[in-house]
Image (tube, rainbow, N blue to C red; front, side, top):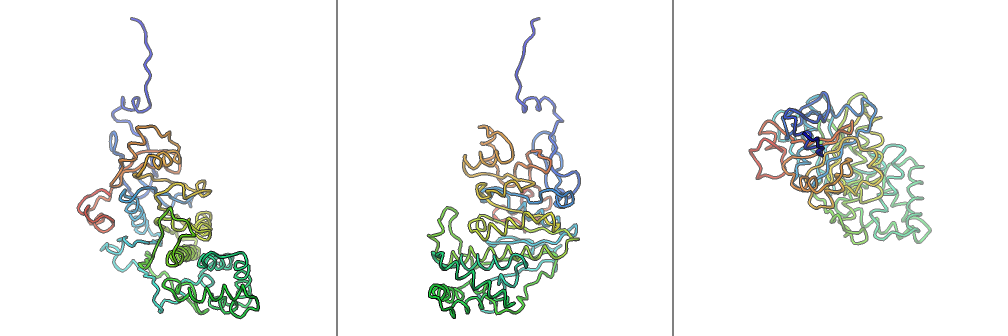
Length: 400
């Protein structure tokens, strides 16, 4: 009989082995889901692994609305708290539900930040920023608030912040006072613009009086909510932002700075910082700077960052600092191709089609070893899904 050669794809070859499976995830750690193709095997994810092994500790969750990335992030946070980690969960929409779980009763602190005068200065960057960062953070925040700021305003604000820090003050209100008292016209103009803005909604959070902010994490899980946010469309240019949108985007960076302060305190205990929809933060220079600092210092601070977004292009130079990646459903062919390339897969027609169809917690996972596998996030217990889901109509399902 004549010999012959038959070409097989990797998938076809794997299908010849009914019990074959591609390993993905951590060797040990909390159960996160299972491999839905072939013989189902449990997938574990240990968020403490990267900091312990001195590897990139940021975790990226990419997916369109309703794909399951937010539920997956909360599931990781929940499991981490059960094992002793401290959790800081930023809930911008707000729609997170860790505080609804009976097993976490008394262990979740919900901080609702608003423009109420009683919360004046709770996020003053000169009060909450790390020592080596607060001066630059204050400058960036003030300039982000100013409409169409000029180089003259930038110089005036920078000098006023520097003088405030030299005095030993920890109040942005003092910066405004120095600007208004300046002999230079441009400085007074900047001061007058900031004086109007600082009493506008969420901007009150950033202008303290130099006293303690009294904003402390007192429980294992701290959920930060800002129901008054008015966020622009992802594609909107900064010069089209309304005043409320400028204030909202600038304030988000202060939340990230507060999270950075929290994780820097006790390096002996593992921390998780969950930042959902980070494109809001990456839209501004100061937000990108804070995220960059969080990602780079995560290992040193024994912390794991969970970064949720629906646009892979938001990351820029942060891409090389990401350890684990979860690719959930994508809403366009271009987005699916970009996500597949990001995790090292060739965006074939079949793969692109599958990723675009992913919903309810189905995703591709790239672990710390660079292995990629398909995973179904599985919460096991219905009450977990009921509390953590962000789409109420899915109540009663056991998969996210």
